[in-house]
Length: 261
Image 1 (cartoon, rainbow, N blue to C red):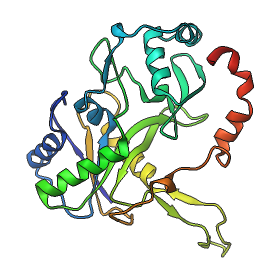
Image 2 (spheres, one colour):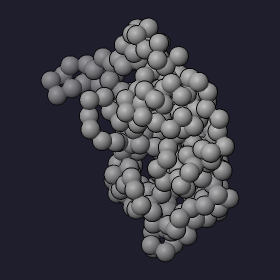
Image 3 (cartoon, helix red, strand yellow):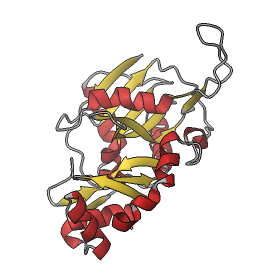
């Protein structure tokens, strides 16, 4: 598998994102081929969609003010998080643990980072649909059938630092079901699935970086995935009841209610 970071200029609202990325590929003399996967930073997609919020325009609720004081955050920022989140489960200094689009993510994907001063950037609108539209536009402009991933960064329990997470997927199966495969000793795997989309997200995230690298996309070649026009997006989701982390969080939700609800 080979990964190529795509350097671009600063992406701005109303840019055509596909044109910017294709221009970056041309300048770097990198060819896009059938069965490549294009991985794109969620903020690049969000910015061209106009998913920026001026924090001074937000009137925080009393709940937002209470949480902001507890977690050392701006009340207006917390208010945006509350509006974006499906649930807020708790928090630490500068971050709230929230559920957004069936993903546990800090601050419901709302971020100051790589947003203009005084603004916050949200997740893209309908990320899976957005990935599909980008894939179709690439096909129209290049004739190439590729997979598309929209990714963000996230933290992992009890681990320092960020990794990648796939939030929009198009053109390939996001999970490999390893159940019934044999291990090195001939034992059948009982519950294991491999999160291919998240694995790719983390690989691309390593190249994109987190600061001012200006690498909003990565082209991945020779990817060991199953390409398909019709994919089961639900295969990437596990129910809260079956999830190791969510089952524990929801069972202990009563202890958080006095602060976060």
